[in-house]
Length: 390
Ligand code: PMP
Picture 1 (cartoon, rainbow, N blue to C red):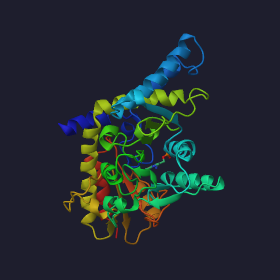
Picture 2: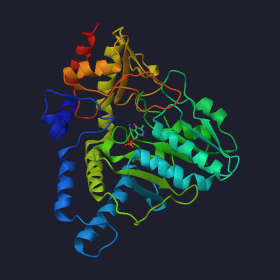
Picture 3: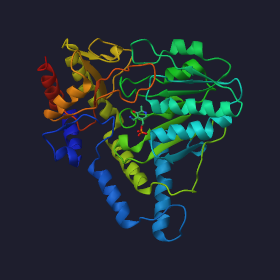
Picture 4: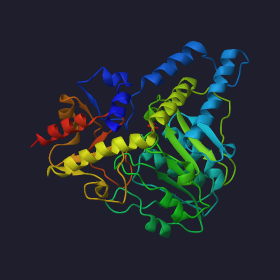
């Protein structure tokens, strides 16, 4: 049964177990780490720590093998149907990965008059790099047009019908997000593919979906998947750009010309094993149920407004499934104060404007983000503190 399964997983997070008086509700900012990931780091550093792709002695060979094995592991985790035609490039994180695509791939594939479609109201890491690429090209005399990936008003999801009107013969690239870091919905990326047709490369920011939803590149039919290891139970300073070669040359910058974050890669490999064992589907089921419980509780209290209104499961919305993120505002209490009050009861949440640069929610809010270690008791405890506020 799901509850017993969850208890056995929660028990594997040492920092969570050590602090029963606290509730970590900020996994979208960074995740806590299960023991298996801590063990993998310790194991790597105490058995074969060396640089990768260089020496020929056993530790160096083991490290090179670890990096190559992890590339294959990432492809497998993403359900890559043609691993021989794809590439996994390690970066420092999602921000670095998106910037790498924007700097090293995009300009080489665009010409004067081309258009790209990007989200204006998603995490700024998925906007700024595309604008910088446009400005870089402009300095070289190549003018490209950046168009907005449209949202359905107030829904927290893209609008595929409106997107079809934005896409035209000059569209060369689309950047999208799988799970919005404030609204928390699964953005139904397969509908973007339907709207843009088979030939336009799609780059997916999967920072909030890896480990929270099954992410299948075959099903989503995307060309780039970018994510951060630290949000997927591994360490900060490691990220992934997965890309496929179906539309143009494979994207493989770097090679072995720098030292990869081998410790982070060892952690990522263990984290992907752990997540696969736990099952992203079941994790999604658990977190979605908690998020729905929280959303329903907030919707019953007049003082709170939940952002991304179509996402309420209570309203029976079939549009979209909410994942592990619920963001809300109190009528009178600012997000900083609310965060302070909540921590006085042991609840750790995210406050402020959530790095959302574009035309979306500029006002501050409180974000609760979950992972598989979170419990019904934590959600009910949070709701009862929120209910006690004026
Ligand atoms: N995209 C999304 C959707 C995110 O939630 C985040 C992290 N908040 C990022 C990109 C940036 O990730 P990182 O800070 O690990 O580079």
